[in-house]
Length: 113
Image (cartoon, rainbow, N blue to C red; front, side, top):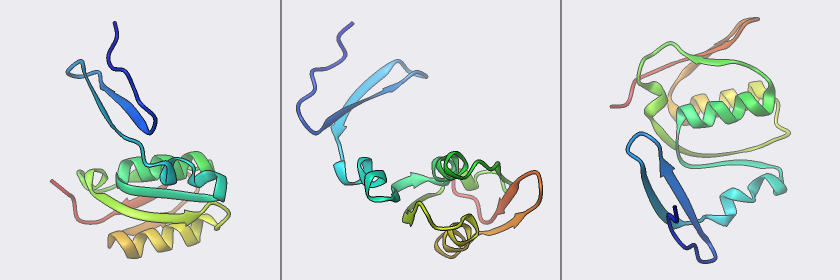
């Protein structure tokens, strides 16, 4: 089934939960930031941000506060920055706290609705 015809700089997002597709303009700066050595997040949920940090750093990140993953933030990291520096910067931006043990990194803070 054809969902849409995309023009340059457009993307299609499909939501499985309600079987809906929508098109939106593509932010090429954020999509291609990795080529410049940056991890860039523009209004992303903390869940999405930490998922990307997990992927880049090979660690597990969990939330001790329910709902904290729904909070949205704007931030950017050099992908060569050590993980502890990324976490420290993220902690300042998001007003969260983190702890590191051998199994995982735990993030706590105020939840978003």
